[in-house]
Image 1 (tube, one colour):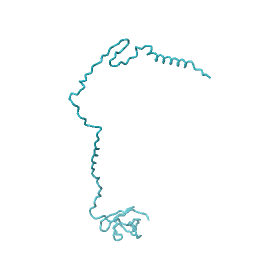
Image 2 (cartoon, rainbow, N blue to C red; image 1 turned 180 degrees about the vertical axis):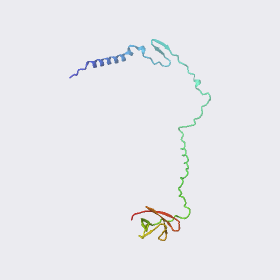
Image 3 (cartoon, one colour; image 1 turned 135 degrees about the horizontal axis):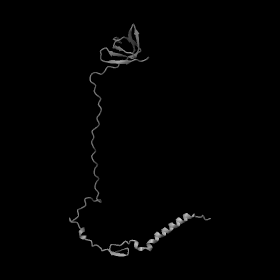
Image 4 (cartoon, rainbow, N blue to C red; image 1 turned 90 degrees about the vertical axis):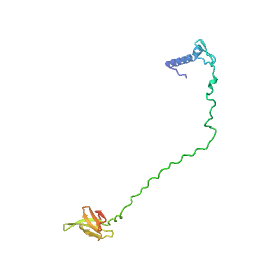
Length: 178
């Protein structure tokens, strides 16, 4: 079964074939428009005219160097040399080592091992209650000596200040619940 080709497409296809034939046949019909590739000693034909191109004589003596002999090559790609040694490593100073500051004087006293667990008022005076790691309890007012080693300096609402009897250290102890 043969499919019918629409007429506009057939016209366009026919016009394209006609243009292609004209492009191919043009050099055959009009040979003067095709440029010829002449050699160096031939004549050139252009649009019905013939022009003779003279051969230029080469001056070979001008090609010789003015300075005489050529220098020897400095680089010979066919001669092998040992590989150059790698550059010396860069010497870097070692990083500074952190030195903690050296403490001067005697070491600080150890922390006071008491726990502050309450404040009470007795006869109009505020008293603080403490306990040690053995479970003993102590109470005192400001200025009293606790456990024979510590002086109660101040009683605050949530902390108490204590110091060693010899005056070498002062510590604030926060209120803790037991």
